[in-house]
Amino acid sequence: MGGRLKQVVVIGGGHAGIEAAYMAARMGVATSLLTMNLDQIGQMSCNPSIGGVGKGHMVRELDALGGAMGRLIDATGIHFRILNESRGVAVRGPRAQADKVKYRIAARSLLERLPNLHLRQGTAAGLLWEEGTRGLRGVELLDGSVLPCDAVVVTSGTFLNGRILIGEKRLEAGRAGEPPSTHLAEQLRALGLRHRRLKTGTSPRLAKDSIDFSRLDEQPGDQPPRPFSFFSAGIPQSQVSCHIVHTTRETEAIVRENLPKSSLYGGHIEGVGPRYCPSIEDKFVKFPDKGRHQIFVEPESLETGEIYLAGLSTSMPPDVQLRMVRSLPGFEAAEILRPGYAIEYDSFDPLQLRRDLSVEGLEGVWFAGQINGTTGYEEAAGQGLLAGINAARWLRAQDPIVLGREQAYLGVMVDDLVTKGTDEPYRMLTARAEHRLGLACDLADGRLLPVAREVGALSADELAQVEAKVQRREHLRAQCEEAWVTQTSPFGPIVAAAGIRLEAGLSLSELFRRQQIGTAEADDCLALLGDWGLEQPGWNAATERDLLLFDLRYAPYREREARLLEGQRAWDHVRIPSDLRVEHLHGISSEVLEKLALHRPETLGQASRIPGITPAAVTILHLLIHRSQHSGAKGENRP
Image (cartoon, one colour):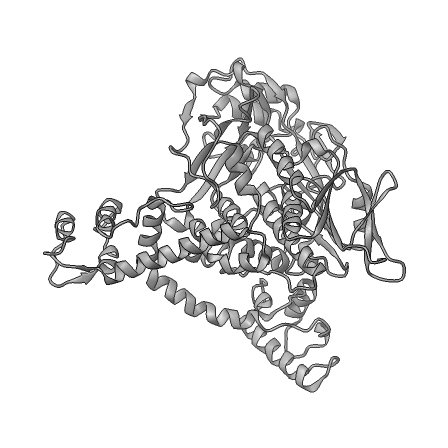
């Protein structure tokens, strides 16, 4: 490479690309971000929101590792809510409406300020390798120029052979108003990578002044709004309400009458759509007993009068879309500014990825985002963050960062993708995690602190803030263990008011485990401990109280889970040799052998999570690996 400084190129300026470029540059690696349109960096092509249950957890995790999304939404969010707040701490999820115009500007500005990052407008035509070697040498652009690089992160979104569908009309496009990426898509196919067509869609955008909001249910945000990022000082934007409306019988009749005109039901779509974000056509067809469907009326920006109808994704012709919209109460005079549409695109089987998101057989290449079969800004951002980290570490000859399922929802997502694969757009749900009790989003900064130190993207001040918070939590827990509660202690009146009669004394920790102690009683007790509630950077007293009660009450369950995890971790540390010839293993069923050959797990733990592979098969595989390693045999492997 002629002594040239090693560098990484990120292809794509969406949410995966932002995180990949941001992390690589913050880690000190020379980075170029290549995108078709610099003005569209961070564009929200679908609904203008970040977070939710599961998704919000991942945003907190990437923030804990130094990522950008949490900071960007805090700077540009106009409506914040904590979802599932009435439920347990583990499944609460932050969500926010973004001012999509300001988000896009903030994302580009953030990247432009990074000293190691160069932004470049252009279209990737293909990857270039050194002749006679497997070493990557650059990315070729459609204009014939070359961006030299040693590593590349492909975050192509919906652009690979992208096609927009509205009714019977088909338009080759990566998204509305932008061309698809065909040359890169064809090169990746020609390399022999397994691919499939997936599909997603958007809802129509409406003129705000054409809607009668007095007939809608108002949904105000939380006051005060709580930031996503552990490092945000506050929320600077003015806050606005969202609204809710429901479909009517007329809406259903219009949809059913025009199903043959829909791209989806008219047979024009090849790709598989997201299960958990169905189109309005799918909702009425697949859930015929549901009388009505909820639609969220969301502002797109404080700077424009554009409204997004979340829950009304459709590929109907524009005239049918207008009839559908005007069948909603308060929308009788509504005007559509941009019709909804479906879009299908190429994705590549994530079973072809290693656990660090690099592509098996393509040295120096990482995939992140919708190219791997996921859907959603947050899923894309999480993959981009990890791919950017690992590309940078690979250039430095450092071991990759691989998060465990018990560490983070990011770890759950990557393990699901590279171990099980996906036949439909993958969305993060809290139900996908076996260890939810240990994955509360408010604890992500402390939980991932050791990884954040190793990655090195957080500043010294940010690391110090997290360390101080962790120490303060430990001190508070120790205070609760040491404080003694009796009927005559300072805690006595609080205990009596709660209807608890103490026969003997107990620690404050033990008291907090009793169901009669709610948040009000806990606040009164904690007030007697001194300045625990004193606000400091990153410390919110109400949140910390909830986390303390959660920690104390669920401690027995978490201890039991920790014991189970020890056994699982043992399997995760047993690597399956890359040159082990699976087809020659004896003592394992043909079904298991086929799955091992297809999925190519890197560890026994990963193998154990492949559907259809039994614990007995894993045990036999462990024995065979052990014997083959000690005998040196790489051909016939007999138990």
